[in-house]
Length: 101
Image (cartoon, rainbow, N blue to C red):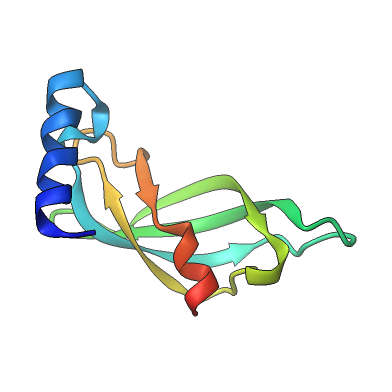
């Protein structure tokens, strides 16, 4: 995302009272995840993550995401994310980056 777009998104988050208004740029590290089941293209993936970023003490998080089976992540992968400072369990991950890995 270009810098002006990121600034506009942050301003909108602040104006709307979003919990992501104070988000920092960080990463998520996938520690463990469920395997895809069957042949359905989009499936639920349960993951254990470590959130990393300035001021975070490697915060653990369990989450579930619907993903395209063709781009299933692997343990050890690191993806960029925005992480709320006040509510570190609130994250915005660029899951589309899996298709480019």
